[in-house]
Length: 215
Image (tube, rainbow, N blue to C red):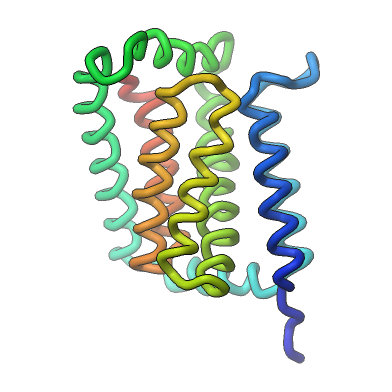
C-alpha cells in the first residue's frame, strides 16, 4: 500500500512552528521544573513524533539509511566533526577581534553546563539532542524543502532558519556557531544524503565541544 505523502501545507506549518517554538527554547524561557537540556530534548522528540505521524516515509528514510551503515558514513561523520572542531578552534583564537565581548558570550554558552552531571549531559547530547537535531533539521525539513524548492534553495532555507532560531539567545557567538554548523551539516546532507553520517558528526562534535575538549 502506498504511504500518504506529507502535504506542502503540513510542511509549511511545521516549519512555522519550528520558527516559533525553538526560539522560545533558546530565549531562556522555561518552566522552573525543567532545565535547558531537558526542554530542548522534549521539544525535539515532540517534533519528531509529529513528523513520523504525518509522514510515514520519514521512518523508511531513516531505516534505509541506518540499515546501509557502512564505514564510509562513519568516516564521513568523524571527518566532518574534526573539521568543524578545527574550524571552531581557529575561530576561537580570533574571536576577541571578530566579536567584541565574544569570550564572555562563549562563557554564557558553557554556563548551560553549570550543575549538570557529565554523564547526564553526555546522554542528552549523544542520544537525543545530536540525533534529534539532525533528524529534524536535515533529515526532515531540508529533505522535504529540497524536494519542493530544489536542493540549493532547500539548503539555504533550512541553514538560515537553523541559525535564526538561535537569535533569541541574544548571543551573537551562538548564532554564528549555529550558522556555521547549519551550513556544514546542511551541505554534507545535500552532498551525501545520509542523515546517519550527519548524526555521527553532530554527536562527536557536541561531545568534543561540551565535554572532552571544550574551547
